[in-house]
Image (tube, rainbow, N blue to C red; front, side):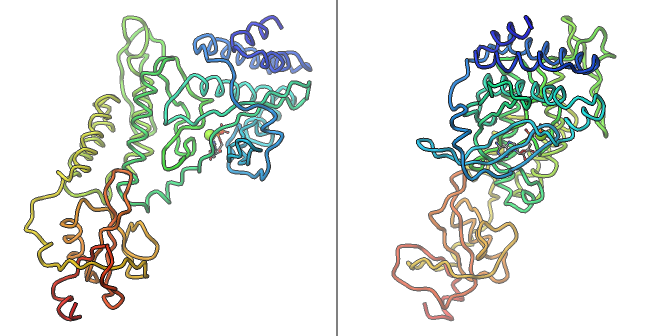
Length: 429
Ligand SMILES: Nc1ncnc2c1ncn2[C@@H]1O[C@H](COP(=O)(O)OP(=O)(O)O)[C@@H](O)[C@H]1O
Ligand SMILES: [Mg+2]
């Protein structure tokens, strides 16, 4: 009991005292489960001492109680996540995370130990660990914590709820059907996060359960949401042989440093996982031709762990620069002079579709300028005209709409349509 008071003090939140007392005081779990509970409590205490997380702030139980429109948005083996609308004044949609009583973690524990309360407590430690990490880590790639609610009453459910910004779970199949620029952004967001985790205030952090489902997208930004399996410890060692980094398809031998830790193991583990779950699927296909050697280099270097996160981030930034500045465009004879520029009113009429289009109505692609759009239009058999719209992608590139239909052009607006010279003549435009 004394341990839990110390823990609550370390966690820096008086409200946590009730939870900590509850977690280690109620009922009598069997000794095997008791040992696991004590181990988790010790780990949480150590983490809290190292994290020196700022005290609990932000929204609390009143926000959770007043939430409406509550509905399931996701669940994993330990936690259940509900989407909800907070009461005024905030009125925002948030994610509420709590222990998943029917999840695999708790169910497996109950089968093993036959003590539902104790098993829920065990899982609650994971949520508390995640909470400590969320409070200590600040980065656009870490889901934002809006607040927390500790149920102070001696409720056998021992409810802890975290209030987070709401995202949408990552759908890899869907991502594979989005334009390359959007997939590149996900990978860039990820490497920026891994760079932060490698140099975080808590030391180098490894995401032990690194899978796409531990991430969500919030306004198009990739964020990690599941931190209960994060480790801030680097593997201890005595000799190099202790430092094997094993994956199903590959293993790496790392060095044991003079201070008895496997050198950079957390950073390398994250990087190889980023390579195998994200980069290999999202980076290469349909990338601009001239960028492909640079992307191949990133894939090879991360797949062999030749690069660390610093070098990988630099390589990504170089690709971004080449892309944004149009330097990747190969010098080719101009196609634009084959087009007639006409001032038109913009019409969002349905037209031919193309692969990886930004619009469901027709063929809309990101371009560097009208010259690149002309080259694209020439490569599409149906294309007769294009408009460079004022809509921009995240890199600031304009979206161009490619169309085949010339009959609906209304002359005189303030948009510029580029019409193939031959077609313009035919239609007497
Ligand atoms: N902030 C969030 N917004 C939307 N969905 C989320 C959010 N956080 C988590 N989820 C969804 O809930 C699932 C379970 O959350 P997670 O923290 O991964 O729990 P577990 O530890 O059980 O795996 C995730 O896989 C994700 O799909
Ligand atoms: Mg998860």
